Structure formats: C-alpha cells, structure tokens
Amino acid sequence: MPRLAPTLLSFAALAATLLASEPPPSHADPAPPIAPPRALPSLASTKYKLPNGLEVILHEDHRTPTVTTNLWYHVGSKDEPAHKNGFAHLFEHVMFQGSKHVAEDTFFRHLEQAGGTGVNGTTNTDRTNYFETVPKNRLELALWLESDRMGFLLDHADASTFQSQREVVKNERRQNYENAPYGLVLSFIRAELFPEGHPYHLLTIGTPQDLDNATMEDVRGFFRTWYRPGNATLVVCGDLEIASTRALVEKYFGPIPANGEPARPPPVPAVSRAAPTRLEVVAGVELPRVTVSWVTPAFFAPGDAELDVVAHVLSEGKTSRLYKRLVYDLQSAQSVSASQQSMQLASVFEITATAKPGHTPEELLLEIDRELDLLEQKGVTDAELSRAKTVMEAQVLFDLERGGSRANRLNTYNHYTGDPGYLERDLERTRSITREALAGAQKTLLPRSARVVTIVTPEKDAPLAGRLVKAVKGSGK
Image (cartoon, rainbow, N blue to C red; front, side):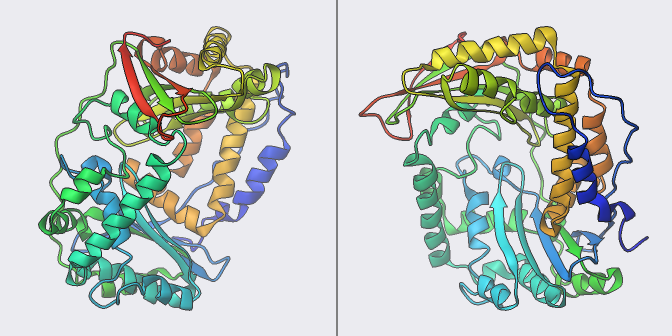
C-alpha cells in the first residue's frame, strides 16, 4: 500500500478550487454551467485486529512530523442501563485522573512536557473518544498512556476519584444546562421526541439523581463492561511507519485481557410519531424562541444526506432562505439555525429561531412554515443545490487537512459504517442528490404531523434554563 494516498496532498487545493468556481449565491441565479465531474478523494488506511479484539486503524501522512492517536470506545449514553444516566460521560472525566502506572492528575502533564497538543475526550449518545497529537518521536508515550488507562484504570481509581469527578460533572451540568439561558429546553425536546425507555430519551450529561445514587460497584461494573479491547477502536494517524507502529501497538495494548465484546440490548424499534406536539416553556430570558424538531433517519441512512442539504439551504449563510427572510428582510429574528443532528439509532432535524424584541415565537413559526412550504412546493434552485454541495464538500476537504480531524473521521466512518475508508461514498451521497430527491425527503421526513414545536416565552420569575409548563398533544402550531 502506498505510504500516502495521492489525493491527500490535494485536499485543501481541491476545496479551494471548489469554492473559487462557485457563482455568487442568489435565489435568482441561473443554473450554473455544467462542469466535468471532479475525482473523488480517498482516505487510505490499514485496518486489523489484535488477538484481544482491539480494532486498529493506521493512516500514514508524512507532511508534518506529528502523530495523532484517537481512541473510540463504542459506548455512549444510549448504552447506559436504566437509572445509570451519565455514566459514560462520568468515565470520560475519570479516565484523565490516573491509572495504575500514571499518577493522579499527571496525564496532561506527561503530554504537555512532550509537546502534545489537542489532548481531550468527548462523549455523545453513541461513543466516547480520547485523543492527543504528539511529535512523532513521542508516539510511544501516547500509546502507553492510553493503554494504561484501558487496562489498569480500576487499579488506581477509588471512591474519592469517582466522588470528585461526579461533582465535576454535576457542576458542568449546572453551568451548561441548569444555570444557562434556555439550558433545559433541549432536555424537554429530547424527552418528547424519544419515548421513555428509548436510548435517546435522556441527555448525555446525566442526571444528578442517577450520579448521586451510583455505588462503587455500579461504576466499576460499567467500566468492566464497556472499556475493554473488544469494544474499542484505535486510530493512529500521521507521520508513522506501519510496521514499527504495529509493533508499538502490540507492545502496549496486546497484553490487555480480551474479555470479549459486551452484550448489547436488542435493536430499538424506529420512533414513529402519529401526531404533532406543542411544548410550552417559560424561562427567565429576554427573548422568545421557537424550535421545531423531527425524528429523522439515522447517520448515513437514506435521507440523512438529503436533510443535511435541506438544513444548509435553509440557514447556512446570509443568503439562505430562513436567514434572509427572518433576520434580513423582516428583521423579526435575532438568529436562526437549521441542522440535521445525525446519530446511530435515529437523528434529529431541528430549526431554532430567537426573536428580536417586540416579536413573538408564533410570528417566527409562521414564517418558518412559509419557507418550508415554498421549499416543498417549488424545490431548491439549481444554484442553491450546487452551492450547498460545493460548500459541504469543501468543508469536509478542509477538515481533512488537520491530522486530528482526519483521525476522528476515520473512527467516525468505521463506527457508523464499518469502513474507515468511507470518504468517497460519503462525498458521493451528497454529490448525487437531485432536486427531486430533496423535495421527496422533505415531504416524507419533515411532515407537520410528526413534529414537536417548542415555544419559549420570557417570564421574569421563571428559571433561566426554562420550565416546561404544558405539552399539548395533537398540536404542532
């Protein structure tokens, strides 16, 4: 296999060419001239498994003398048992506190002294990841640190470790949710979109009650179940040699006992909403807000890419439909956004608009519906579709120029599709979208009959984060 995919060197050049060739955006633009199809870039890698089940993906890029390690544990908040909400996020924090051979609070210090950058971890509904970028001659240090906490975390972490990090997580929840403007609105929406018992019913941050009620055996059991080689994928990306890197990975991760793959619950049935819902929320904020939400197809499923494009047409840039209508023309909204939030079991398509003083959420909702109706009836213009495709592809290509982002993309593709080299098909699924496909996706996947409309009304004495007052079933207005 070549040391570096030939197209990798031209990622940024391809992106710049794409953007430079785009006509100025306008709803009245004529159809852009037909250009010859551009070759799809590839993302080459070597993928294999250790005898203990650890999946390893190696990607060579010799342009800069750095290496990124990106380790995914295939566990997120969707995998938490009942009454254990927040455990995945809790372990994201605990994993940085030390392990058998790494003293308390020295993980970051080891990497900083070695010139490491981008050291962090994140948790979402579907996975937990840990990553760092180091000079290429310090790769062994990064692999040792990651392997030690995979194999020997519980030899170090004790009741005081868990207690301190539990308080850190609870404080994070207070700062980002309970004491933040509109902070709890997302939890009200998620609980309505996904029924109780569904893996996405609760937020990843966790609930204080579940964290407080957790015993040491609960948290140790969670680690033993999910933090094992057979439930993890290690990506090493950058200025490396395949043979020597394989030897280092085997040296540090090979001795960790296998323990097999964790047993997972049976697949969750798809969420089917038979009627719309209106959520009424009061909050101690200055400006009203409206959010319109739908449950939509899962990451990389049919319809997912189409809704990414719909979101782009609606709110990406100052000439996008909702921005132009609400913020520029009517000046009734301070901000507006649309997104397809892709996840493993299902996704959420969401539009949020915050009103300017003197305007109401109902005004904004009427205009949102007006733009959605126009988009469904008349479709996107050729120029809008071309621009959306171009900008989205350019964003991917620019992202791939950073080694850390490339490593995470390899793990993303591998986790959700089983193929770390899914880049070509990922780009192709957007390139191949037609106006007819967009119209069909919007009509089928974003019906008013299956949406949740959330109205946030300012109220002086209400909590800043919001309080759910009423849920009206059968009303999406």
